[in-house]
Image (cartoon, rainbow, N blue to C red; front, side, top):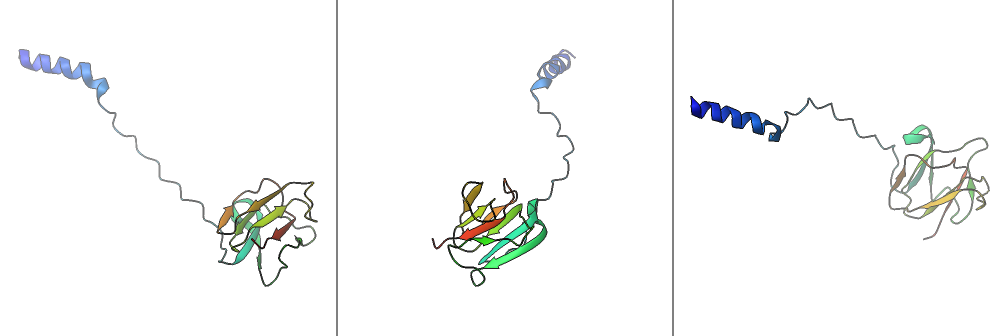
Length: 126
């Protein structure tokens, strides 16, 4: 009896050291799906997270190192650069550097939320 009482007391005193039973885990959230954009393309989406209407450009449809404005009234909130070349996205529809702009590497850059509305872009030689 004495051994049982001592063992119970020891167990009660050390219970806080034991790991708690794991809580029921919430189902893992599915990873966000990256929009479709093939190798060699610059893909632009009207909404964040690669949603909304999509515009696709490749090197056969644009002039390298020239400003390519989006159609009037269009702007972009997410993009994927798979051209293999750097692409600069501009807030200005004339590629002016007085507004916001950022350059994205061409090896497969996925940007789910550009920090401004993109209205034009330039693809660089290297």
